[in-house]
Length: 341
Image (cartoon, rainbow, N blue to C red):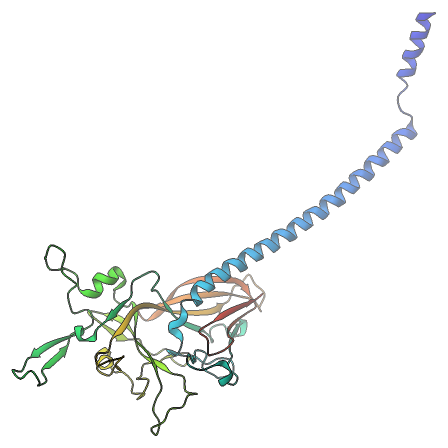
């Protein structure tokens, strides 16, 4: 009897699932799989959205970093570059001695969009003082004495030799230095075509009928030139897009050359003038067409002027709809950039 019971139990255990049970199980499994697919699809879509958002935020952060580094060095542009903004006013007007309430409509806006490709450019004169040294230079070192009168009260004669004409300070062992002054200080940066800015650090206004107009932006005496031999020669004209201010801040007489600039410098707190010699770059920003974009989009690029042309273009921001250069007030030396995508 025990053997019969064992046999009976064995048959029961091998019965398996009924067709109804299998169909119910398949339905439940399919429902779970469908739910998982919906969840997975939603998860992947959200992940893609987050990735795109992260990429955009990363690009914006990189753009902000790049433009901040450019714009924070652009103080040399103020009152040294004539560039009309969207309302016909000089974008780089700067009034360091007036409150913002004294200037009506004191903001500036210069915008770029795809319709301006090849016809509108934004320029900056940026300092390279962080990467290279700058010096305070006594103009007398650019001249040589040709005659010395016996009478100490009489004027002698001098001749202009160039800003890099004097030798550098002798070595500690007393041997004469091989390099000249500018070559010693700026090394390879003092090279043909490289841009330097000379500034007498005081702001002056032109005198008209023995009076001053405070609404005329004050300017420092400035010479913007490129290296040529032992001297600097003025940069060429850049057409209607931009003009560099190359005149005396009081008399408005245009400088002929660096010799003329030195001889007409204003004195600062005494009889002897001096200038700051600073390496600089003339930068151009523009929108350039990208065939992979829709018509209203373009890349914001930057190039640097050297030896007669703007070259070495780099992309500052991709797929830009509009780039706005702003100055909230001309009484502050602050320039900002807004990228619209």
